[in-house]
Every structure is written in structure tokens, then in C-alpha cells.
Length: 142
Image 1 (cartoon, rainbow, N blue to C red):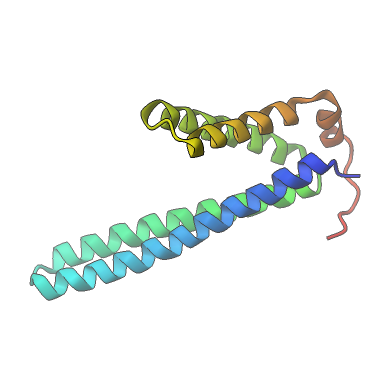
Image 2: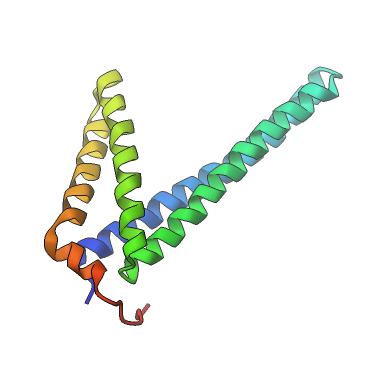
């Protein structure tokens, strides 16, 4: 049986993935609109292609990250060890990012974000939770 904490972390991972996907779609759209604006203002097709290309590249990159987070979320859902490891790595990176945010702009959001990442790290390191990921996982019931 999957622990409740792992279920919550998987859902948080999917929520994060949806934000990346939404951001990716927005970047692709804004890149396209910005390129159209550039083409209306200037006749430089290089600048238009560059603005459009940057928007599309950033958008596609965000979509790839979203896809990876979806896969990791499903891995957590079915208690795969690689998903736990990936989540520990990502939570560490997110924690470092949140701590930089706290140092630069000490807002409630950054402090809360850092707290969630610390909680994820500590929870996934608990011996009982670690053991759950070491067991051969049973087929998941979605």
C-alpha cells in the first residue's frame, strides 16, 4: 500500500508539471505574438525569427520538463525507486532555488516553498518510506 505522504508528493509533482506545461504553452504563444509584433514594427526577418525561436525553444523546454515530471509522478505513484531518487534530486535543486529566493526576496511564498521542499526531502528519507520503494511494487490501481 502506498503511503499517504507519497501520494501527496506525487500529486504535487503533477501540479508542478501542469504549471510547467501551462508556462510552456504561454511561452510558445508569447514568442509567436512577439515575433508578429516585431515583424509589424521592423522589416528585419532575422530579429523576428530569433524572437520566435527563443519563445518556442523555451516553451518546448518547459513542456519537456512537464513531461518528465508527469513520468516521475507516476513513478512515485507505483513506488518506483528511480522516481524517489529523481524526486530527491529535484527537491534538492528546488530547495536551493527557494533558499536563493528567500535570501533575495524574503516573502512568505519563498519560505513556504523552501519548507515544502525540506518536508519532501525529510519524508522521502524516512526509513519506512525508503523501504516502501525498495519492495517490488504491486500493480497500481489508478
